[in-house]
Image (tube, rainbow over all chains, first blue to last red; front, side, top):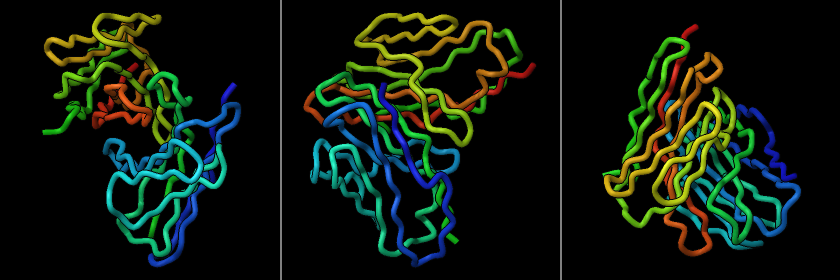
Length: 113
Length: 113
């Protein structure tokens, strides 16, 4: 069966510090991968998605970047965090060529102070 | 106009009540419809998935899609306190290989014992 992992689970960072969040998927090959941000009491905002290694599409201009160095690894980064980067970050995947059903990871809660 | 509209609630009902959660969407090309349940501080989990119009039932949950009115619903029968969560509707037109979903804002449901 497929499993998706995210770490860290919780992170408190000062403004201006760098960020690296990691997402890995087990039990599948060549998945589509997605990064979302969810602000408190708000819906999901798609940040980036990837249909293959090294292929990154950005949905909104922002202070963040994403990379996919391996087939089942998706990384969200920032060089300098802003207060507005605080939120709940979720990684999701779907099987390549499969249905449109996305499966989510447990999320990373980021607080920028 | 947002592509998917969902009343954020909160919605509070007594245990045993029938709950109706609803979303409207604007793009008639959407063909795939999902409902996700999200407990506090957790990632969303897929609850129901339907393709095109019609009903789908799974235990106490029924998903309904009316493409003529661009309206999707989730019904919960005999609601339980464990159903207290945020419910997110999502949709996709399914073309291409991006697998991108468009989410509603989410409705917060509280079932009181």
